[in-house]
Image 1: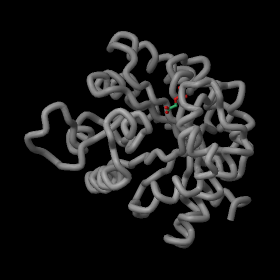
Image 2: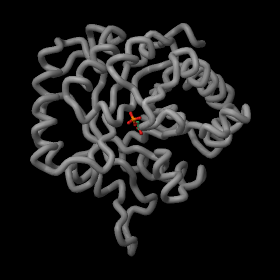
Image 3: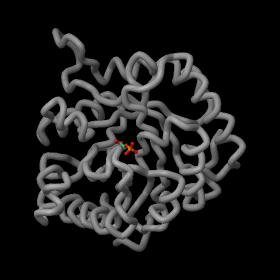
Length: 262
Ligand code: PGA
């Protein structure tokens, strides 16, 4: 199963986290738009994930560029008395096509459970957003040999929803500068695909699994060479257009000529 990419188009996503104001977001988007155009026609799918107040700015600056925009979180309910939360409908209305679900910073800082994350993915798919569900083990869990058990637990409540992607983001690699080696990432990705296949059969062949955690232009080519690494979810390096474009280039080689930007 691992050696065949089954037409999975690589996907490079920039998670801006709680960075930038509108002026900076606009400038970054314009550089990305122009830079991606200059890279040529064979590109991976690209999206950025700004915080909510920047969505409109990004959508506007990236209009007709082929680069998508996503939210960093959503609430599972479609509307209601949920102060401070944002619904999938509101994200779609703001021009988002994607949404992150269960980023480890949400799991850790907001106590999001595996079940809650799964319900967010369902809510996203219901309104036509493509959920990028993040999974990954902590340093302690890896040391204790629990990586696969943790991934299995995080996968358990998820369903093979239309458009769903997984992002393997080992918590110890996020923002730490300590990326997983391509081989370590590959082992985890292959495990996730195998498990998905046990539950959903051939859907596992088309499931895209991104790697995230200190991805840089220095390590992205090695990661892109792994048969089950279908792209990257990039935090820090996505705030620098040159570095983000270099990571995009690493995955461009895997994209096929038919997958051109408009
Ligand atoms: P990082 O963040 O690239 O800064 O490690 C990745 C992420 O949290 O999605």
